[in-house]
Length: 147
Image (cartoon, rainbow, N blue to C red):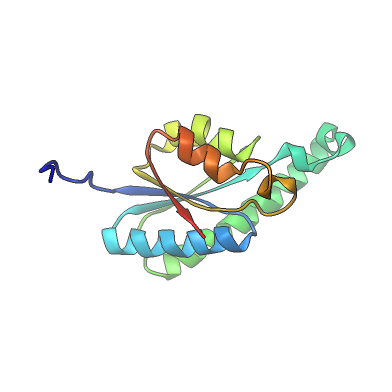
C-alpha cells in the first residue's frame, strides 16, 4: 500500500437546502467537523432558475429571497455552534448550485472536503443529471455524497 499520508482535513464545506439529503449531509458534516476539529463552512445558493421572469427582474423580490436564505443559513450556523463546532462560516451566493459551488465558492473558501446531499430539493433535476454528480465530477477537492 502507498505510504503517502492522507491529506489533513481542516475545512469542510457543506451545501444545504431543504431536502432530506441535504439535511443528512449537514449532520454528517457536523460530525466530521467535530471529529476532526475542522472549520465548517455552510453554503446555500439562491437559484435563479426557480424564479419566474418577473421575479428575476424584481430587485425587491430577489432581495427578499436572499434575506430569507440568509436567515435560514444562519439557523444552520447556530445549530453547528450549539453542537460544539468551534469555527463556523457561512457563504451565500446566487446562480446554478453546482456550478456556483465549484467555480466560485470552493476557490473563495478553499475547503479540503465538500459534503453534499445526493438529490436536489425538487423538480426535474432529481432525474436529469444531478447537481451532486456535477460537483463530484468537477470539484478540485474530495467530495462526499450523502444519501
